[in-house]
Length: 122
Ligand code: FES
Image (tube, rainbow, N blue to C red; front, side, top):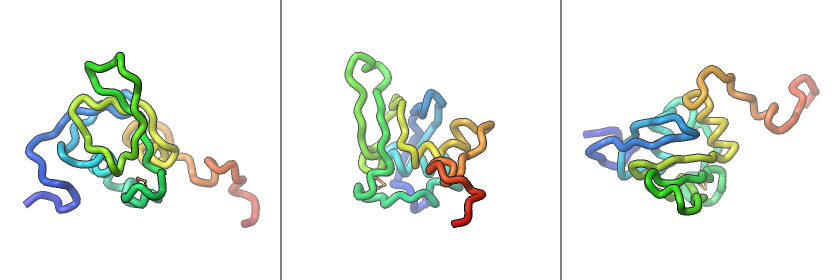
């Protein structure tokens, strides 16, 4: 029996996220495979997982179909596909995936993103 978080899959498919390649379980949503990639951060994101919050927007193209326009979708609603090239991430996804996409860059705090001075009294 596999991990109950993921739909049953037989193989891993290759995708790129901001040009970094990952092997992820087929037949799962993009948001779920982001959890596969980064199990320590995605579960703590502010994601609703059911198309309400809109915090999981991604833009992608398919390898071999570079002439078509990029598609913007909700990662919690679209299934991953072999050759998917995710070129843009929502701020929430970028924040939660930064550790695996760009491990040398420290994750900004939510306060940094909001332009809030952390030294100011709350
Ligand atoms: S996680 Fe909320 S819309 Fe996708």
